[in-house]
Length: 142
Image 1 (tube, helix red, strand yellow):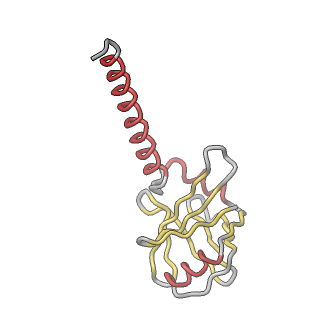
Image 2: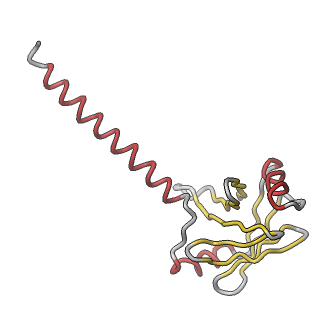
């Protein structure tokens, strides 16, 4: 065994431990970002920021929404402020109020409850509104 083997082994162990920590940290951070939980102090800022915005989804998203909520959905979603702590989601033919329920934004379409997650890329270039019902997620972007 050469004199450098223990040093190489120690370096490999340190690098492995660091990479394991980094991977765990990234996945924990991603799970927190995608949880949809909202800090109650931030809701008014979110409502103001989303007021008057228009979002789009693709045909796959429209089909998923139609199968979940048993209605035809357009590709556009208009979001308007509805008071200080609620939003009005308008899908061309109908509107739905989305408000804070516990620590989530939620609403009901055709008797089916859903949650809403609002996210922004780390660079700030991309934004998304996700409509979540059970295991289904439909993303609107702008």
